[in-house]
Image 1 (cartoon, rainbow, N blue to C red):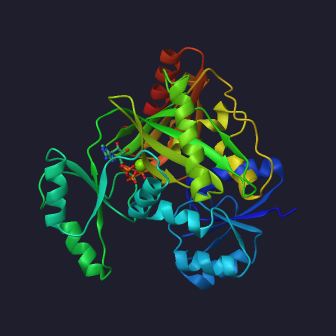
Image 2: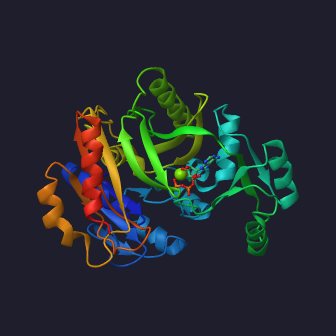
Length: 378
Ligand SMILES: Nc1ncnc2c1ncn2[C@@H]1O[C@H](COP(=O)(O)OP(=O)(O)OP(=O)(O)O)[C@@H](O)[C@H]1O
Ligand SMILES: [Mg+2]
């Protein structure tokens, strides 16, 4: 069996694959952008994932290549495949996580539910979309956005002029994605894992709460989601995974609209913040499942260990010192909380860790998780 997994990207997602790999006796190697990154606990190389020689050399040391982020250029991914490297997810799938315009086009082709959208190349086209959608819309850069960067609420055709200018300066005949401003009751996320041989596994749909465009909390399962809603979310995610040929973990971010529909917001083809609760909350965590899936091993059970799991992100961290300085208080006052520290320097807005609490009383679980995370924040 092939047992060395190479992860491109050295952030917390790669880091959280490490314990799962250790338990299964899978070797994991990381190609990190810098020394001392979050995943530097594993055997790692340092190099630029945009440099083909660096990536090719790294790929020679592993049996399968997977990712902590979606930014490896298509040209390099295709070169790896041409050289016979197992790449999961492969470039044909990853394309739709790299480019939100291509993603919208493909999901529309597959007949999946998405917000009304259009490709716009200039302010006049944006104006036309606004006129047809009540004068308000959400504009997104097709590439490179994360944590709400590259997402803007607009109400005037000139509100995205700086982005049109930047695209023109880049020299690529770029376009922006514009979408209807979805009136949602809440945001949900559906995780699914898919093996190259086709087996899929889904977790219960979860509720995600965003603050300033950044994921702040996750409740698993999403309250009041049993029955048809959960079935529909799972069905959508499996149709995406099969339709696009995703291998490994896929997270489908969804809007539950005020009129009760589910619309796909975006896709992530890797373990995702909305699935961190599964480390303690599920029989098989998204990180273990990702490793199983990219190695084409049978997938694990996805039953919940607790009636409720709540994950709260630690964003920014303490103003002075490190997260660990707060352990004496946090661990003494919240013995049931599971604290995850990504080993990153605190900085405003940065995800530096998370807390998960499980239990049978949702109010209690939410309280504990928030109170624990608060100890690490000023
Ligand atoms: N069409 C829309 N209507 C209403 N709200 C939206 C819409 N698109 C995005 N949002 C809001 O903005 C947030 C960020 O958008 P999106 O997920 O596309 O961006 P991102 O920066 O790629 O996010 P991520 O942090 O998941 O990488 C969403 O979670 C949602 O709260
Ligand atoms: Mg998102």
